[in-house]
Image 1: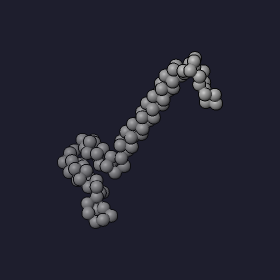
Image 2: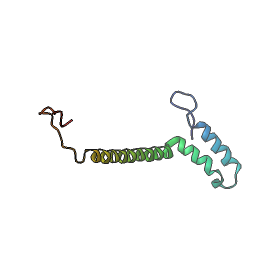
Image 3: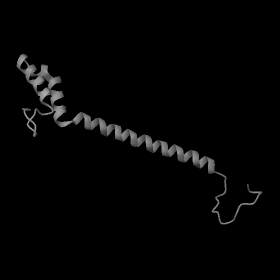
Length: 96
């Protein structure tokens, strides 16, 4: 049951528990309160929220990796055929 929090007030999930308990007391079959039960359990454990955040993080990492690979391809295409300069010899007017 969801009663009081550590500070003495109602717990953060108390409204969901009350909603679930009210539904449970009015129906003949417990499966009719599945939505209220799911809301209460999500409030307690945050499983759906954690799964959503993990999916977002994975997608962000994949996009970042794809963007970096695309950027590397663009740079490689620009650099292809251009001699690499170390900077030890100053460029002449012909090379500019």
